[in-house]
Image (cartoon, rainbow, N blue to C red; front, top):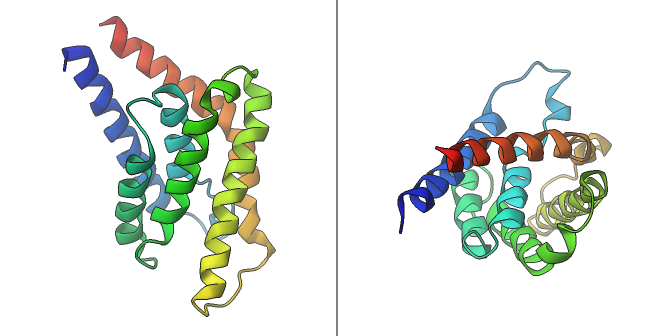
Length: 162
């Protein structure tokens, strides 16, 4: 593994750690419902840009770490992130052809898929169903995707240029 590949791998790890930190960071009461799905968005980006290196096992491992950090049912996030990673890796060649605003719609569907799977797990384990504001983070992710994608692409290019 070359120096550039090693730096790229560290960038993936650090961005996922930062996404997990943003996921558990306390927010004001009114804004907590609008918290984006940072980890899912970051994982989608890396699966789109490095599908041969970042895949389903990265989604599973990141999901397990997120389960432990957030205190959710062990495997809940891992299952959702694994499914999203699988779909992105399988469809990455098609998704990358679209302009970023159309990619946002596809990312929104992926975020909704992850939320729907999590909702199914909540129902299967007998936990109470969340209110309608449960779906708000997916809409925030739809709006955030172009900016997050541009930022991570810029950072990746800066590291590659050094």
